[in-house]
Amino acid sequence: MSSIPFIDLKSQYNALKTNIDSRIMKVLESGAYIGGPEVAELEKKLAEHTGVSHVLACASGTDALLIPMMALGIGPGDEVITTGFSFIATAETIVLAGAKPIYVDIDKRTYNIDPVAIEKAITPKTKAIVPVSLYGQVVDMDEIMAIAKKHNLYVLEDLAQSYGARYKDKKSGSFGIASGTSFYPAKPLGCYGDGGAIFTNDAKLAVAMKEVREHGSEKRYYHTRLGVNGRLDTIQCAILLAKLERYDWELEQRQRVADRYNQAFSEIKAPQFTTPYIKPDRNCAWAQYTLTVENRAEFQKKLQDKGVPTSVHYPMTMADQPWYKEHTAGATANIPNARWAADHVVSLPMFPDMTNDIQDRVIEAVITALK
Ligand SMILES: *Cc1c(COP(=O)(O)O)cnc(C)c1O
Image (cartoon, rainbow, N blue to C red; front, side):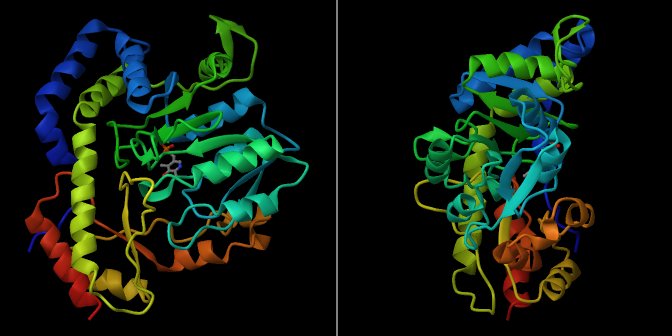
C-alpha cells in the first residue's frame, strides 16, 4: 500500500494551479521581483482578513518575531517571558534581539502558555510576553493582555501556527503591540519558500518595523537604525494572494478533518491517551492534529508500518535544547507540563484536501495501534 503524505501540498497546488501560475507569470514578466505591486496588495488583503490596520510582509516567521522586538528596542538587560514548548524560533529571536528568554509552563490540555505561570515569572526586568498560539489554537489572550496591562509589558503573539484562527470576536494576530506569522510551506497558510508577516495596530511602530525590515533605512542609503534584510519577494506574495482566496474554505476543511478524527477516537481508552482540547470561546487553525500516547516510539512505528506518517512537534522543550540549556538557563526552567508534552505528543496527517478514504486509513491504524 502506498504511503499517505503528512501534508499534501501538491493536491493543493493542483487545485489552485491556474490562478497561481498566471500570477507568477505576471510577476516574471513585470520584472519587479522585489517590492512589486503584489507586496502591497498582499499586505492589504491580510489586513482585511485579520482586522489589523498595518501588515508588513517579511522574509520568514523568524523575522516576523525579530523585527518587532528590534523596532521596540527590546534588548540587553530585558527579560522576555515565553512558553517552554514551541518551535525554537520563538526563543531564538528573543536571544537574537539581545534579551533573555524566561520559559514558563503550559496548560497540559491546550499546550499553550499558562497565564498564572506568566504572572509568577514577572520581575522588574520583564519587558515583554511572547505567547505562542500552538498547533493553531489562540492562547488565553484576555488573561495575558490583563497581566500585560497591569505590569506595563508588551505582548507579541507568535501566530506562526494559528493564522486565521478566531478568539472570541477577534482574529489571531490582532492582539498586543505586534504579532508575527510564518508562511513556511507546511504552515496553515504557506507560500512556496520562506515567508512571514507582521501585524500591528500601532502606526508609529509600523513605520519603525518597515525601516528595520529594510536595513534600518529611513530612506534609500540612509540608515538610522540597525536593521535586517527582511523583505518578502514579489513571487511569494503573488502565490499567497492566490492561496488566500480559498483559505477560509481550507480552515473549514481542516475543521472537518479534526471533527472526524475526534469522533473516531472518542471511544479509545489507552494510558496517557488524549485528543486535542479546544476551548469553547475560540477555534483552531489546525496546523497540527496532536495526540498524546504513552509509548510514542512504538506508536509511530506501528503507524509507519501501515504507511501512515506521524511527526513530533516538538521532541524537546526549547529550554532543554543543548545551546539554550547552556546559554539561557534552560536547565533550571520549571516547566513540568512542557517536558511531559515533549515526551508524549505525536501529530497525525492533517491537510485541507484530505479525503475520507485516506483519513480512514489513518484512523484504522491509530485504533489498531492502541488496542
Ligand atoms: C514555524 C514557526 C516559526 C518560524 O517560522 P519560519 O517561517 O520557519 O521562520 C516560529 N514560531 C513557531 C511557533 C513556528 O511554528
